[in-house]
Length: 441
Image (spheres, rainbow, N blue to C red):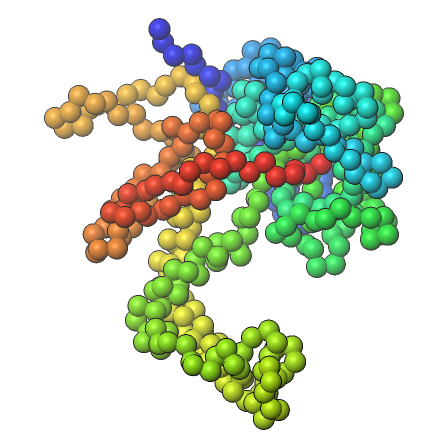
C-alpha cells in the first residue's frame, strides 16, 4: 500500500503574505514593525484562518487541506482530548488571574482529560495548550512554511479563555509573537517596553499596574484579526463578556540575536587565538585571587589588605592584562572570517535538527542512480537542505549535508543542542529534551 500523502507544503514567503493579509506587505512589515512596534490587522472575514487554500507553493498550487475549518476552538480542543485520551499535564498550563493574583490548577491524576478541562473552563480558568500543531496538519504546515521564510524556529501555543476572564497578568515576552484570534473576542492592552527591556532575551516577571504607563494600544481581537507584538512590549488580555475566546500565538526568534551568535563564536575565537598566542596559554598569576574579585571591585581593597594594595595598584594591572589579552583574541578573530561562518553553520545545524519536516506532497521525479549503484536519488528543495564544508581537526576536510527531511513533528523544537562536528567529522545530536516553558499570551 502506498504511504498516505500529507498536505503539500507552502513556501514561507507566501505563508507570511497570507498571515499579514492584503493590508500589509512583508517588505513594509519588516521595515516598520519587525522588532520595532506592534501591528494590528482588522479583518472583516471572521473565517480568515479557517481556509489556507490561498497559500501558494513553489509550483503555484495551493495547500490541499480539503474543506475549510477552524484551526482551533474550544470544541476542537475537547475533541482532541476525547479522541487521543488524557494527555500529560506538561502539555497544558491551566491558570487564572484575579485582582493581580495568579492561581494554577493541576489534576490529581497527573493527566488531563476532556472532563477535567471542561470543569476548569466552568471555573474561569484559561488553558494554555502547548504544541497544538501535533494534532493539526494544517497548523503544522503553516508553521513549517513560516520557518522557511524566517529561517528560524516557529512555535505555537493556544489560549482558551472563558468569557470575562484573564489568564495571565501583564508581562513581556522574549519572542516575536503573532496572535491569531480564532474564536470569540479578547480585549488587549499593549504598553511600551519598560526601561532597559527593549528586545529582551528573557521573559519578564509578573508586572503590577503601578509599574506600567498608559497603554499605547487598546484593541479587541475578533475571529480573523491579527496582532503582532515585538519582544519586550508589555501586554495583557481579557476575554469579552459575551463568549468564549480562543487564540493562537505563533512565536519566533527566541535566543536568535547577535549576542547568541557571538556566544557560539567566542569559545572558538579563544581556542583559535590560544593556539598561536603564547601569552594566552601562560598560567594565571599566583597573586590573582588576592588582588582580584568582586570584593575588590566593590570596595577597592582586597580582604585584609592595606590601602597600598588597593584597586589602582596590582588589581588594576591584572585587569589591564586580561583586557589586553581579550583584545588580542578579538583581533585574531577579525582576521579569520571562517570563525564567523563556522558559528553560523552551528546555528544552522540546530535549526535544521529542530525545525518541522516539510509537509509531504507529490514526490519530485527520481534522478538516475549514481554510477554502479541501484539506489535512486531525489534532491529535496533548497529550503530544506544546507551544505556545510569544514575541517575535522586533523587537516582532513569534509562536506556535510544538513536537511530536515527525516525530522519528526513530535520532536519539533525539542533538541536543546546539536553537536556540529563530532569526532571524525561526523555530525551528531544530543538527546532530545522537551522545553515546555511558560508561553506568551
